[in-house]
Structure formats: C-alpha cells, structure tokens
Image 1 (tube, rainbow, N blue to C red):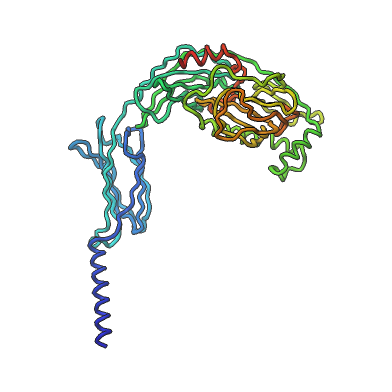
Image 2: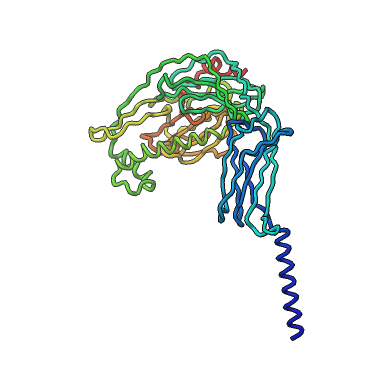
Length: 431
C-alpha cells in the first residue's frame, strides 16, 4: 500500500510540475505569415497578414517604426474559437517617409500559458518605403505596324522592376532585359482589334508596386485579309470523327465532332499558346529572316475568315491564323530559325505539332505533322529537320500549317520571311 501511495504521489507531483511548466512557459505562439515579403513597398500595396492559432487567436496588432516614430496601424480582438484570420492593411495612413521602415506584428492566443496570459508572437519585418514610380525612357523612335503584324519597342528603366512591357486595351506583352541593359518588347497589332483600342504604351511596375506608363510614336498600316468558303465533305468529316471521337464521346455525328473540335479545341489551343509564350529566352535566339518550307505553295493565308458549309448550309465560321504550305506528301519540315523546342506533341486542331522558341516571346508553330522529329528541350538550328508534313488534326490534306506567335498572340508569318522587314523593324533597333 505504501509503495502504491508513493507512486501516486509521484505522478501527481510530475503532473503538477508539468502543469506549472505549461502555465509558465506555454507552447508555440500564433503563426504569422506576411505578404509581400520584406523588401520595397509602397502606399499602393496592401499588406496581408495571415494568422493561424490552434489555441484560438485573442488579439493582433501591427505598428510601423521609422526612426523614433511609431504608428499603430492595426489593433483588433477576436471572439473565442477564432483559429485563423486574414487581415489587409494599407500603410498610407502611417505618414511614412521614403526609406527603411519596420513593421512590428504582435499576436496573442487564448491558451493558459504564462499564467493565462497566452502565448505571444512578436515579429519585426524590415521594408523600404518607396513611392517613386520607375522612370521610362523610350529609345526606339519609329514604330510602323501593320494590322496582324509586329512592332518592337526598346526602352530603359532606372530601377529594378517586377515586370514591364507593352499594354493596350486589356492586353499585356512582356518586355525582356537585354545584355546591353536596355529592355526590348515585341508586341502585335492584333488582326481583330479596333484601331481606337490599339494605343500601345510602355508599362512598368517596380518592386514596391509603383506603376508608370509612357507613350510611343507609332504608325498603323491597314491591311485587308482574304475570306474563303469551305464545303465540308462526308469523307473529310469521317476522317475528323475518327481522330477526335474520344475527345467528344457524346457527339452523335461526324459533323458535331467537327464543330466541337473547330470551336472548343481552337479555344483550348489558344490558351496553350499563351502559356507557352511565357516559356521563352529573354534574348533573341534567331538570326536574320525565317525560312519558309522549301518548294511549297500557299494554300491558306493568315487571318483568313473561313466559312464552313455542309450540304449547302453555313455551319461555322472561324479565322485561320497561320499560313498553309503544301509540298510533297510527308515532306521534311526544317526549323524556320534557331531556337529551343518548347512543345512537341499533339495539339488540338493542329494535330501533331512542334513549337520552337526564338526568344523574347517569339515562337514558330509547325502543325498537322505526320511525324515529329524533335523533343521538348532540343536546341535546333535553322534548317534542322523537326518533322514531316501530314494531315493530322483538322487538316484537309497533307500540308504544313506554319504560324508565328508573339507572347501567345498569333501574327502574320509573312513579315518574318522578309529579311528587309526584319532589319528595318527589329534588328536595327536591337543593335
């Protein structure tokens, strides 16, 4: 009995000690995550605090400290059971000056630690308050841009930036820093945009979130595009149905399969091209003019509006964004210029497809291939054979669909086959 009593008393003493230790020392305090990370910050940016506290968050405060001056920018208490919160604050009210500033965040939970005072987390984050937007100096002086074509702007910035490039309407095309320290941005004049909406400006956002825009001098060159009427045959529709039936199992007829592919897959392909446009070298990988498929005849042109008819009735309308080039069946396809393969697989309406990155967002597309002779990551030189022509995808006969793309936007390939155009509009500016 005496031994049992001793054991029980010992356990009680241990538990009492642990309880006292917990009351005095406690466990971990609330977890604090701050966004953005310490560095440059401006009045434009919102500071977001995410707090997690399994024991329940009781109160949270944040103050700015600059020199000897402090300012409480946030002070809140929370009801019992609050285990996670997200607070957004702006520093504009703190009356900060340009320069270093510390954000002091204090959070206390509802645990019984520290004799009921709870666990406390206190973090200090060093920032640099900066409200001056980047200065933009446009170096290129003339920008003659044809509808469906491309322009190049060269500019300098006086500080490091998050991003920069050309903006107009709701579109953005990134610029890339060159070895010279200048920035260069290839940007399109989309074939389908209203001229009043096309007002390109250089745009830059610095690390603190400050923005600046600068206008450029430009001249628009109007251009008309062809249209065509294509009669769909049953044999073509059966070919398409065999290729795409697994993608649209609910489609009842070959015509329905074709229409879904021509509409839905076309939209998916456009999204893929924009994603691939970001996988680019910041500096040019190409040199001189781009190569056209040897001994080929054009069968379809860029921005060609195509009206599809079946049994005499209009069933669809789409725009062809590339140039169709017909040569011998299964003709070898050379790379139009040097670059890196960023896509080599099946791609919707383009069938078996290769896409080569030439740098600065410029990419070339080779569609409807019967055979792919390269893989993602391959470095290719101009005239390297990357596949063979075919009729995969929505092709009506063996040919090459050749496309040129700028940051995901398809543009007129004809310009890039013209050595003089490249020299006048691209190379001379980069040099």
